[in-house]
Image 1 (cartoon, rainbow, N blue to C red):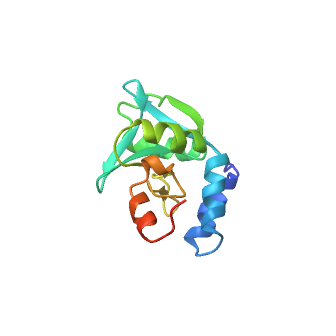
Image 2 (cartoon, rainbow, N blue to C red; image 1 turned 120 degrees about the vertical axis):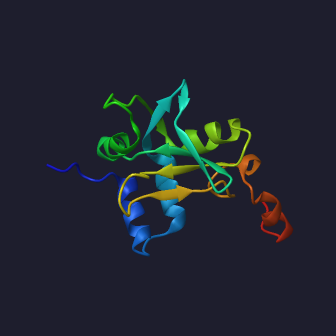
Image 3 (tube, rainbow, N blue to C red; image 1 turned 90 degrees about the horizontal axis):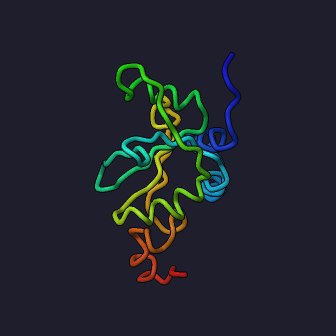
Length: 139
């Protein structure tokens, strides 16, 4: 029996269909508990396009899909359960490099990326904060 989708997974599916409000999606991400694999004493991440992406999953099924593709030797994947707000407000700024949150990356057509931009991460970690201020959109 398939596990019911979380509220965040539902919002991601809406956005991928071109529906829903992007701000509501960010709000849902911030409220949601995400399962983040751990490796080497830290959170599992990958780099792409000059950004370090912390990988989080909406449920154990999505995490299991990731583990099948990325875990070696069939060992169980250890993970931390963290609220999305903690990831983007505390973890991302502590990395000292452009970083964002990638959710459900092993899910076919279900992944969503929350980049290091104003409105997703804090201004101190946002790569576009200067551009926002130059266009009169600063806070």
